[in-house]
Length: 411
Ligand SMILES: Cc1cc2nc3c(=O)[nH]c(=O)nc-3n(C[C@H](O)[C@H](O)[C@H](O)COP(=O)(O)OP(=O)(O)OC[C@H]3O[C@@H](n4cnc5c(N)ncnc54)[C@H](O)[C@@H]3O)c2cc1C
Image 1 (cartoon, rainbow, N blue to C red):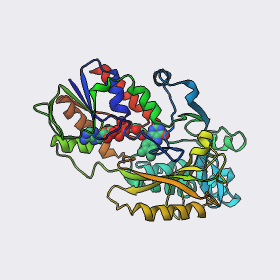
Image 2 (tube, rainbow, N blue to C red; image 1 turned 180 degrees about the horizontal axis):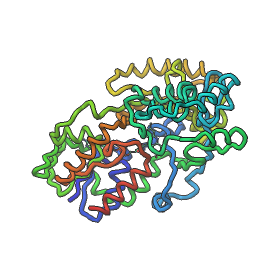
Image 3 (cartoon, helix red, strand yellow; image 1 turned 90 degrees about the vertical axis):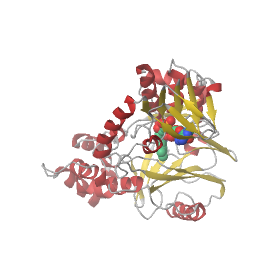
């Protein structure tokens, strides 16, 4: 029997795909993991904005098998950066011509005078080496430092994988006259009823009697293939974990270096207002300046087409950083939204918040090397760790589905 830990998209996709007998354990009372939707006071909010770019048509078709096409919106992606007192199209590096002339010249000059031997061993060094000092220091470094809540020198060059919008000099210059609308995708899919619809579609392929909600795994004995939960002891043949990898090590009693596995936390405020705000076209805004507490603000009302402003606001914290009380953070958030001109006369009529911990794992050279050794050790004992946090990587929900299908086929 395959014991699957977690009823997020990874665990559910594996359950839907495996030909073995299985049981899914989920600590919470609801399926979905980080891909849940909240319905409150007429607003539809995800844990944080979850939008979908399917690169594998077969996975999109699989999801769409059980979703009415009318329920799925295809949204033109329009996103900008709130840069000082103006809006600049995202990605910043492609749109430096929208900056004031002196700043544009600085960016262009630095881009064309990057030393040939500029080191590029860390994420931060790579930003300097690829884009020059001005682009790096005006946007890429402050924004990503706010997001990751760590020194970017700690992160691997490839910390964001394909999610980082690279551009070479020719593309940057060409974009001055022939805008490509390039970021990592021009449109995205979003279900009108929120991201949980995608999870529900996959879950409809899973035998509901074999999902145990509200049952938390407490420990694993890899030698005897035994798992202890807060309700019982279970013997398994294979264990498929989607918990954060360090948690899996702890549960198996596996020693590991805690300095190797670090991450950030993201506190998300979902905010509903009584009227539309001034921001009418952007799906979300990137906010690099440290005077604003948040690094990104998304506009569900612009995405779904609603007549009241509905926001998600993301604030990054270090793994061990104390998170202030939600009340004080909400007050600060509203002040900053007003200072940024996102909220003007609108009145807050509904709100809730979620702490995503972990949110973005810190992909470093050491974590990449260490996890491969650990995965081999675990596999020798019939334990497989998948998912965004199980595989300790930066990925999308589609990647999670892809990896779960692949593992089910392999086993
Ligand atoms: C801020 C943010 C924005 C994102 N935006 C997007 C986006 O726009 N598009 C996109 O495709 N992806 C996005 N993602 C990524 C997406 O959320 C994840 O890739 C996906 O939800 C991960 O699913 P999972 O099943 O691997 O893990 P999870 O969703 O974390 O599921 C793991 C499950 O395991 C359960 N669990 C943990 N411990 C135990 C235990 N001891 N016993 C039993 N159960 C346990 C948890 O309760 C949880 O339900 C975003 C992520 C973040 C943080």
